[in-house]
Amino acid sequence: MPLSHLDAEGQPRMVDVGGKRVTARRALAQATIRLPAAVRACFEGDDAVTTKGPVIHTAIIAGTQAVKRTAELIPFCHPLPIERCDFSTSLGADALLIECEVALFGKTGVEMEALTGASVAALTVYDMLKAVSHDMVIESVRLVEKHGGKSDIEARTT
Image (cartoon, rainbow, N blue to C red; front, side, top):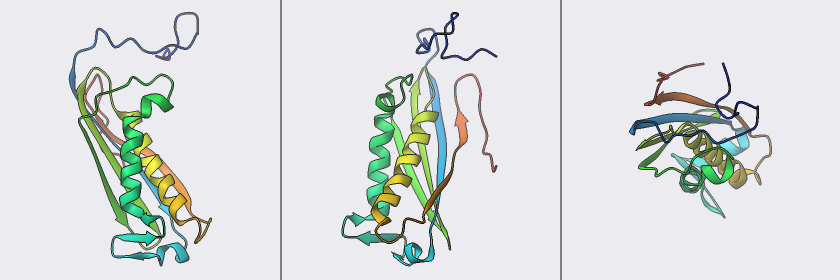
């Protein structure tokens, strides 16, 4: 299968989406951060508050900014008119799960935006809590679902 970001001569290029139909596009990505006990102890309820501010709330703001700026970070991503960007978090005994769902009506998908949002939100959590411990591990940044366009990816567990 030829790579879509290479032309016939093998040179990198942005994919031409001019002939594609506008359809509803949605993607869900997630990132997991393993939290050592000292970091986990910082959380009361659903958030931790540091001198830098509320960790989860700040991570959601940073992740949202990253979603909107993905085309500036990933060379061949098209700038997209994002219509919806939602985050959810789930705090477990030793990990924080961050989910980022992005949607729009457009000619190209939003997988990279969802992955970028989840990643930057996780990096923000790390940044805000690194004074407690550098032993946090960001892992399992992955696309969970994609809908719209020529193929769908249903919820995956692995």
